[in-house]
Image: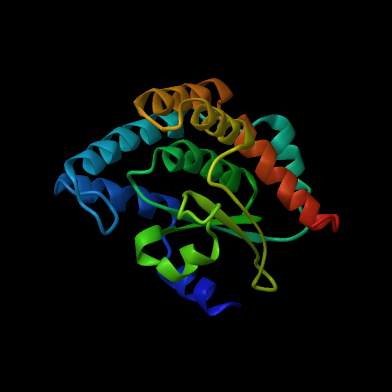
Length: 205
């Protein structure tokens, strides 16, 4: 196993641990990450409330559950995140529900981006430290097989098209993105991640 992965796993959190870490920092008026500001703390508060709602409402489809149950190997899904990240707040509850539905075939672990700079730099998106990033590791072999993120294809296209038209990413696109996630109900995340592990299993990756 690569040293950057091993180090990250050593300091990783379970989903409940991650949720508690973010909530405890908010009690002190702080967010996760090296940078502290009122805006980041406010984003973290909003995301904490959003994740509380999604933890109650996100449903994994029967079709996805059936496909996950057919996986022959066990995986670690190592997610790079931060509490202030809006995409992470939409995606992590979905991934957690997928892991819970997998009957321990998927072990979800979460690390903070700013505490794992070396790891983050290995999984840049177009040169940017975009999160969340899901690193899919074969548990038995300790080998990284794939990565995914920072958002589903449809959401990425929404962002790219907006930036192409207006040249900036402003508050309107942030609102539009959250509405996209609301309408999608986590289905794209389920489909794309399940497709990746199936491609691994059947030798297509």
